[in-house]
Amino acid sequence: MSPPEAIPNHGARRRFLQQGLALAGAAATAAKATPIGAALPTHQRRPGNADLPYGQPAPFEAAVVRTESRDAGFSGWRTPLQHQRGTITPNGLHFAVHHNGIPDIDPTRHCLMLHGLVEQPLRLDWERLQRYPMVSRVHFLECAGNSAANALSPFAMDLPLGHLAGEVSCAEWTGIPLSILIDEAGPKSSAQWVIAEGADAGSHARSLPLKALRQHGLLALFQNGERLRSSQGYPMRLFIPGWEGNVNVKWLHRLEFSDTPAHTKDESGLYTQVLADGRIQRFALTMEVKSLITRPSGQQTLPDPQGHFEIEGLAWSGRGRIARAEISLDGGQRWADAQLHGPVLDRAFTRFTLPWQWRGQRALLMSRATDEHGHIQPARSTWKARYAAHSFNHYNAIQAWAVGRDGRVQNTYA
Amino acid sequence: MPEVLHMPSPYSLSTSLRRPAAQAHALAFAICMQGTGYALEQPTPSAHHPTTLTAPASRAGLGEPLSTQELAAFDITIFPNGRGLPPGQGSVAQGRALYATHCAACHGESGTEGPAARLVGSDGFIGWNDLLRPLRIAKHPLLVQSVGARWPYATTLFDYIRRAMPYQAPKSLESDEVYALSAYLLYRNDLLDEGASLDATTLPKVVMPGARKTVMEEQ
Image 1 (cartoon, each protein chain N blue to C red):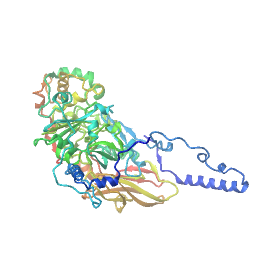
Image 2: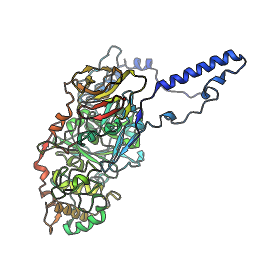
Image 3: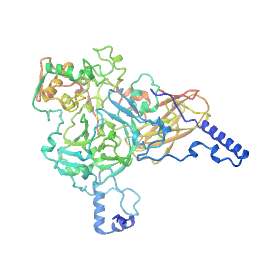
Image 4: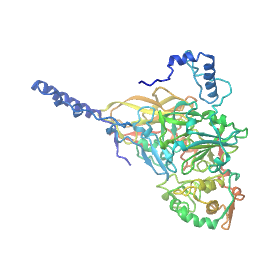
């Protein structure tokens, strides 16, 4: 568990500047011959550092890193959403879930195979794929099991936002529309499904409906302008905007066209949802509308001096654009429209804010997003009523943060 | 000596697009994006809105034929009807020994303890044969679904064990061993007799409780 997080205290910085100004004034009147550097901070009195071939965050931001969870028996690396201000997640902070580790793939020895119920089985090597037309799209990616702790735990766990719901990120993905490659292979009329497989140790595989894959699928080669990171599927991954993370197969090397799904391991168990009546929902792949107040959020403390605080959050929907984000300060009794900050993109993070005057009162903060098709986030109790007690995937209920008189913010159910 | 760059300026590009041949190329590129959900903007100064064209998709055509031999080593998917299952067979008794050697360290002696995924028992927090289970899973709260209770088809056992297990040496087991481990896990879930063996004909016939509970979501 990480230590409590303080929201940066700008009061301390202002005091520092005021002291500096006072010293400078004293120096000016005492002796005009004194070098001006005497009253200035060190970084203004010596040459700066050299830059790096691949840039790094400022040293003072060393705490802004992903955190690993092994609660599920495999490895999940979570985005520190409480530090993200903006809609694009930096590549080094993008979440990742690994069931069988990260393979070390030489791109010149990697190729994409399309086969099964197609007119012409194809292989496409790395060099040839670079010559296909590509598109760039900004989209969120969310693990089916994001927010599992709030879905499962009978009491609200006191954790930072990234620990609770950091298996979601947003990036610009550049790649080849899958329709081009699918049409080149030529699916037979009996082909209804495609089994997408990665070249990792576990040969991760998911069955996907051909129609949707052809309509929305992307063979992603670049993320935020650079080649995919190894942990994101280098040299290529499947990307289907709005669908649960697990089907966005990393290290993609095989697309097998079939008349039926294969019912692979993940679509048989871990990535299914058990409904309240015990039936098992399979192939429910869309991540529904969701929002999170990122600031203030779990384990943060509202700063001195009290007064203006800009409540800020992120909203997204796997079904389209965000139409509305509302914020409640009183646990959902009254709601105010937050300002949406553009661009408001299809199946992407949308940033929202609401100015607030905090004067030491208790508060129960909530955010509630609505997408362009009218889908709206449910209350936690409504979500829980739909599923069995041990079901946790696709949790999109309203997140609540309790603010104490001391300004401390804590995860809560309301 | 400065390098000579053969880079058309934006101006010369837009000029060249007025030529019939270039227009045809631009159209072909736009057409191949049609019907993909990726509408392209027309390359004319007046078009400010994405435009979807309605002609059939063209083909970039750079893919090479994939031969059966090249595919063979990678063609490993097993389907619920048994398609893809190789020759071979394995018994529950053989599987018991293999499980102890290759699986128990991660999945537990009985297949219920974790930390890796639960292989045996009921679905959910409470296992009727394991009343201490809520305590056992406290450290791994997602370990709540078992193969026997959740999976709809027995063929998935063979498919996954062969492609991904054991964790430290995936794809190292022989077909007979994979059949044996599949048989043992089905036996542990009360879905197969202790004296049984499995092969390509019998494995797809095992009826899994997860199948009748299935709700297939429409896309």
